[in-house]
Image 1 (cartoon, rainbow, N blue to C red):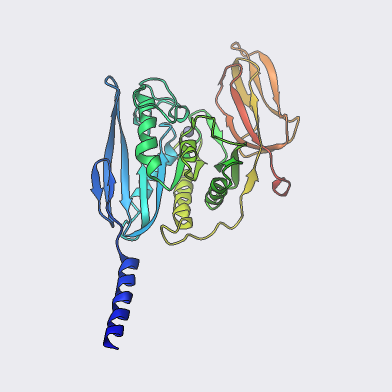
Image 2 (cartoon, rainbow, N blue to C red):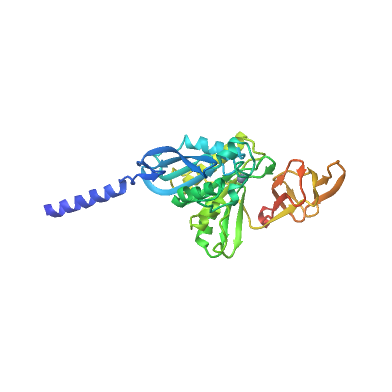
Length: 354
Ligand SMILES: [Zn+2]
């Protein structure tokens, strides 16, 4: 009898221990982060001529759970994501966290410090066009390679956070990839994108497979590795507007709640409209662009969206809407070259049409 009681007690103790056992330390950038602690560290990257660093904070939770990669500043002129990530990093408490957060404060430091839109001034390459990168390429290709292997490849979930660049007006949205041969990844991405509180969720991809394509984009590098991943676009003109910073921070907090890494956040009251198709309007002329609508406006086919003049200011062409929909993002500053994108128009599902 005593033996049986002893056996029962030790089984109970063992399972209690297993339930509360702290996860093993998380090793990152050659450093060991114990459960319940955080580490701020710089990844150093060089190609022998140029060099850069990537500031990453690792939050290793007291309890086991997902590994979420939050990546800001892939485009260094897009400030709202960078500021939101910085604010969030002060609030994540590894003592209370389930799982691990790898927070990339600014992926593209040369672009950020150099105030350059879209590209890294060291090699004039767009970090969000070179994934999976190369271990022996230019500085931006090496940066992508390290982000892919040292950050994205360590994660169970990834979010890449962007905003409208200096020339873009933009309506906030979240996006996920939909490839027909990986329906589970698409479904997880759809759930992640839908809980963030943005009015629109865009479906990227919509193709049979990613297998024979390069990843190219940061978040798609995760998809290529079988890791669910989403994008945010929130903010405009690169401006660090408090409203957009707060919106991004809240979205990241909601994602942490959705993944049960923190206490869950209040659910979004209005479900987002799913946009599965977009139409791009390109400029037919070079010169000055004068928009007549703003991002977020609903437009109907045939409406005048703006006009273009030549370099003397003489009228060259009107820009008309080719479809009904919502302006997701648009060129909002005067310089325009023939062939450049002016508008991205999201086709709205019936229920979301005005
Ligand atoms: Zn961007």
